[in-house]
Length: 110
Length: 116
Image (spheres, chains in turn green, yellow):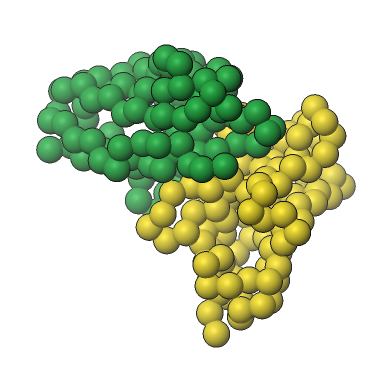
């Protein structure tokens, strides 16, 4: 199972909105609504930001929003803040009853 | 609230095995499904395997089949991941995480360094 495809980097200015894409196939992203997004600051543990495509865990800012169309999921961060600078990973269940993560996207706040 | 605490860093020689533990509290292990994810230095997250509660079996990523064993001790609410035949490519931080597909809670990570 190959990693889901994400852009290596995305950047934006404070207050702007950015979108990170996560592309898979009909065997994973396209087949299930079990898509999660994780934020990871350097040297820290990944933190769940979005689950089941669009849902936010308690305590996660509503500036983070998830969506999916076909084999591509997206994470949009609105009102970009300095604290959002981190690596972001998507994940999905697969039809082999396994899980796969995305390649990761470094978000830079300019 | 679930808390997940992993064992400390390990240094191993090539060819050796390593066993990492993951102790949960706040819930019992029978209420959770523990999976393992690793991250090589400067690289992304890689799913290794874990317990499938629906099928009542442990599932492994194909690339680790035959080299990894994941077990649980419900009497101590501790999960274990043992990886054998280590090479330098296995140098990574190993995480346990609960309840896929969400992976709600993560351990702090265990650095495993493979070096001669």
